[in-house]
Length: 594
Image (cartoon, rainbow, N blue to C red; front, side, top):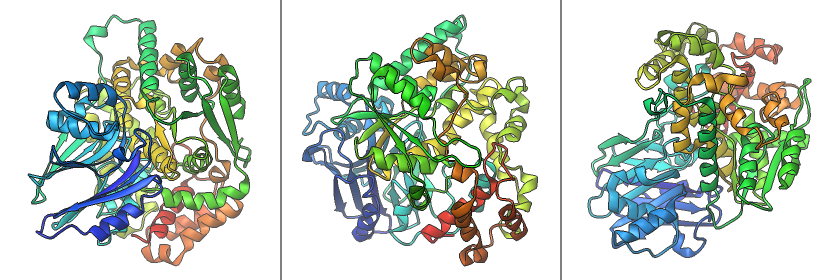
């Protein structure tokens, strides 16, 4: 896990090494263990290293392979790198390190663009071909690792975070009004390739982009999960699906233990992370470090779930750390959390992950997390209302239960000059739901949430907040083979038992029943869900700041009404509507953009 950056020029000039150095310097938090920069004519590549596999200097980046004529920077982990190394050695390749980075280089030399089909893991990479001048960018199937792009006619810059790109200078930082409409409709998600800024895009997940020396490029989408029924499994019983899912998760959890440093677990006390701990214990892991977080209660909401995480830790004998966040840390932590966001992310979970990561990073460099199970296996409460909806009614039904606000209501929030003249969010969902490969309305929603919403909300949240402290997070529920299996599971098995039924039933006898039967929980941060005191003051300051008034995004009457009664208006999914507006302004002001 690391941070990468680079530039390739299309105008005949040499790469701006100073700009790349500034961009790379902004990634220090992602890679505190080392740094490097390589430049050759029109190309410069920069890297910050978090040493997880091959801790020696041989694993440093940018990695230059003179024999192959390639230079590579990489962020992530290839879990099957040892098996691939052995296979590549069988093809005659010789290795000078024991790193997974070198496996990517040799794999590309052997298989070309098809190398990504061989990789099991999370990754973003850039490979430069010395002889052709071609640059190849790649991103993993579920978009776990980010890759932001700033392309002009003269050059392309790329980096692991959006704010790092800004440090290079020359980026168009005006607001993308289509992205703004997505942010305010699609639960603050801005789908790839857009970001909230016109000048910055992101490489979509499961995509390899080949950039020619003249700036033209071609994308190859190399993976897409199928959410329809598999004829070969048509006669499977519910028990067979449960056993297959549990075995797939066993494999996924085991894969994510590959490291030359200890691996811990973020243990929320919910079924997902508890099952990860249980399977690691089953596999013989001892002295496993686990971590859970809690906050002070506010507005009648509990601030921790220590009861359940402690139960799991005791059952499996982990070295458990209960991290209680003192109120004095929350407000300054909130501002630093906004600074760590590559894009505006409205979930109050962000600050929880940020503060948890700060403490966890003092003990371990790698953790597993239960993130992704709800999207992959139907754990959210907006899926059951879709169960009896005809396939042709899926777009409207999904939009009505998921969107924060519909198009007709947008004018009551945004000032006229920021309004689009068409309903881009609904058009996006319509296009996505219209693609073949999703059999029912529930299948279409799960495919959308797994490949779009998950990528640009929960997954991005975990990456940004953990990497702010040089902590690598691995997500076994997003093993692509598990996701492929889950897509084939009949929706009624996922929606059973209040959601994630197939997982709950598979977990019986593996994790404590109390965890399986509990009410679904979240990372609770009551002080943000129930805005009052200094948190409300921070929101008011952001929305009444002269920069916010000059920008004029939001209708002043709407803002005044929300500030007057800050906890009354909720989005469709129960989020604080005032917080959504304030978070966007806080992010824009912090980065001095828009």
